[in-house]
Image (cartoon, rainbow, N blue to C red; front, side, top):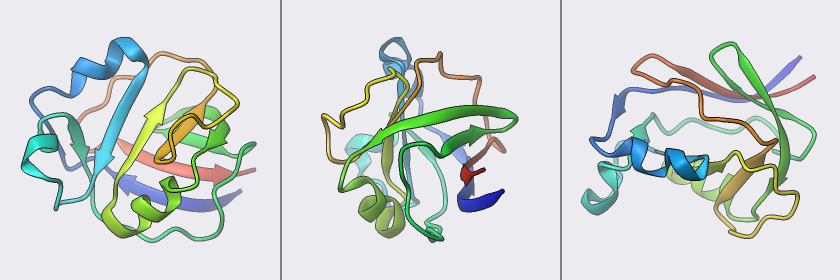
Length: 121
């Protein structure tokens, strides 16, 4: 198993659950704009070790979700700002450039200390 990216939730915005009905959530580094902070899971800005691609897995604690698509800008904003939207709808085409898409699933319970990673098996 190769770890492409790993991080840990440091804080939860007051309104992070507002996107849960749409099976999506947002992570953002410490410098998230004030107007977005309430909607994000706060993480550190960590490097990406390789290329993020469909077929890899998004791992949230012990849960794994197959990546089905990734927008062109998602790796750029993830590496530079710690920012990425994760959409768990099962879409296989990236509608939004800053979004990573996974197989259809419900968002798992996330809290301070939740580990988020992208792995290649």
